[in-house]
Image (cartoon, rainbow, N blue to C red; front, side, top):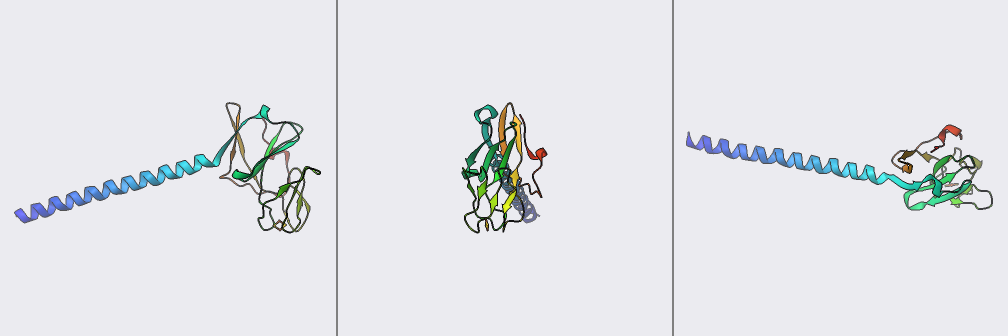
Length: 153
Ligand code: FES
């Protein structure tokens, strides 16, 4: 009888330790997921710090931020939609060129020259307290440029 009680207590201790370990591990994973989500919401500042009809590179975060003449913002992915090379901004056209196979994109990301067959992807932009945030966790594919893809403050 005494042996059984000791065995029971040992198993109880092991069970409690296992539950605590699961809770700790799960909490750590949840916190890491939250951290990585926060890292992908990139703060880019106030809208009035951007001139109209200009492109601003955020290459570390994999996008170009374009402000259009009407004030709208579009965060374009730097990845070419052909095979994923990093595109370059073209000062002359205001669009983008791919150095790998010569695809060209217009200032709003539509294909001007193949082999790319679809426009550049873009990221949603949200506005909080007048600050712009680009959400790089969501890649938006599209068939063409629509004004509804722009964000206005
Ligand atoms: S990867 Fe850009 S044209 Fe091929």
